[in-house]
Image (cartoon, rainbow, N blue to C red; front, top):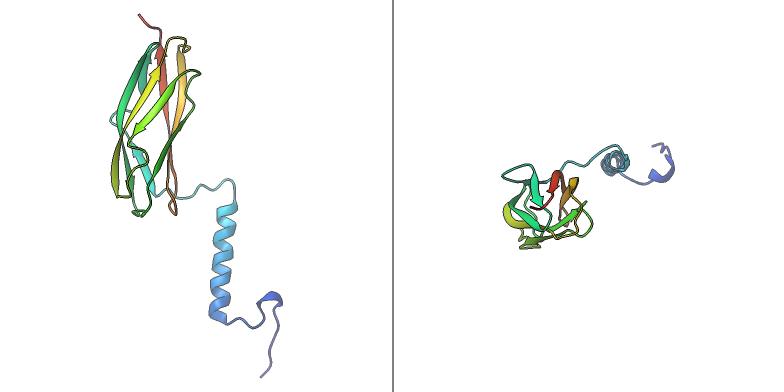
Length: 143
């Protein structure tokens, strides 16, 4: 019986070699910066925008759904708020379940600049893809 050596794959069965090739292909696909992983969570809201006034605030209940239920909590985060504004989620983190709700509040104190902003809400899980969604935030002048 004649053996042909194939570099680093010497001594590996054809089944294992096929598995290694499949893993290498998947890793190459995931390492492409232009490729987004398929989300396993989704963020939904009753309305797709947030509107508030300087010195006020706005809130909505967010629902986070998971297509593959995680066994670890989901951490909520927000970015893109105007200077001086703050936000909170209650509860945070969310329990591991197929659908969970959190009450999201944005507070825009006096001194917050009126204008149009884009905020980014992110749900981060362990061993599960993150969910990311952008929302417009409009801060109007106070009365």
